[in-house]
Image 1: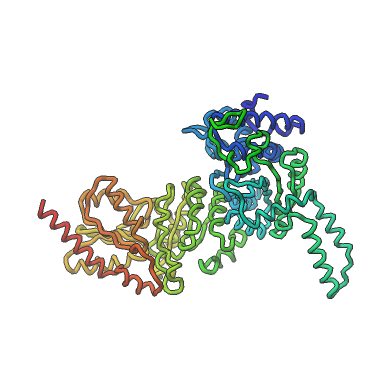
Image 2: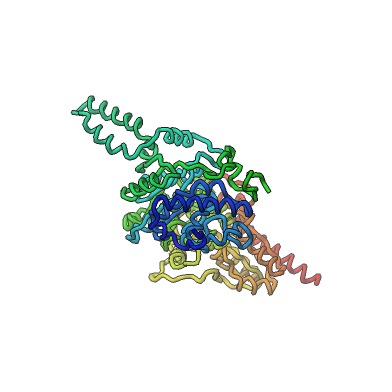
Length: 309
Length: 291
């Protein structure tokens, strides 16, 4: 399709999975071509093509608030909201901003640049929504690198305490500009490898309830057994302990998987975290092969070889 | 801090409107920004010393997006013995003043403070801060009705044509006392309540600087990048060359002690004001003689 005709993401609601896949391929090709001239955050954006399409299909921006942490992965969002024709000026003087910018579009509800701000901003928006007795979803999209930022952890602590309705999308590409560091990174690694979860927990709860616990010491032991079984079965227990309902891990390049889990999340009360696994640079071999994230923010490059111009 | 900042009564009356985020200044600041994007008017109540921890959130989230967040900066100035060196609230002016869109106020007493809070509530052009010291109010009568103070408008507390003291908040009292003493020597010193640290009252500054009246700035905050620096910048930007002397907190960390002891130690006293005014007048007269 003519991508410059995309003015409002509402049209996505009419598309089926096959049509979305075609559109995703076209968007990828557009970004690879355009950024080979202007440079830009290629890897991060190629990683979130399906995710951004799925979010814009399932939520109603700008009523629902999509908040892109860091913001350099908002190119697809910018394309879907009527800015495709401005990509020749990306990151240039007076040109299209490389980050969300309120004065560019009503769909840019929060400006970013530095990492780890999205959860706090989302919490403010959720509180405002509830005070005004409005109904909408607040959807911060945060990477695994940004989640290690101190403010994001402060926000997790508060969100879990207040139990507001919030739909956190954890965009886990196992990569940050300078390599991810820390225990949280390792914990995410374990969740990733734990395999499909798909609300096993509910079934598990039923199962666990069948374990007889009459009282006294035996009951306590049974509770402990239940708890340790939960830890064993539920990959996102870390987030569950923080007060979130965890969904995932989800294949961030599979529309069916994404849509199913976003739909679950929308029906769930309280804070939700969808753990989405994506691959930075997806669909462009030189960027996919990039283990050191040299394709994070790139200057102009030769499309065939990936060599720099 | 609900207890520290005496918010218990607010919490009692509006439990659903008060959010205690724990020890999380960065989150509190950016969450306030998030609230403001949705048309709310959050008041972020935080000690001056702890607001330091949220500098990037001030720069990147609140001021850059020019959001209507109101700051109640508690414990502004020297905090006395129970906080000490680590808790002195002396840097906030310097780290807020250079941020575009920021408005900074400090009241002379609790009555002006209530009008400033009202002003902040009604202000919808970006971030605005009311800084106030630790301790009790002065016991002044409280106006029954609230009014907004025009942004950037100072108040003349005492008239005088020989020199002018620009000051605000806690140091007003010693400035007035110094001016009274000097009057007995026949020196008439104007005292101005510079209640807006940013923006400055440019009308007053233009008038005084055009007349070349010697100026003393006085603040219980760091000199480097402080209010006095703002007055110097104003003179430079407008090509005025008045005699200006700045009094405030020197370029070092201030240890623990009662506030009066500390002010004495750093020469922020009535007597020093008198000395400085005399010196300013001497220099100024010398210049006029030479000319």
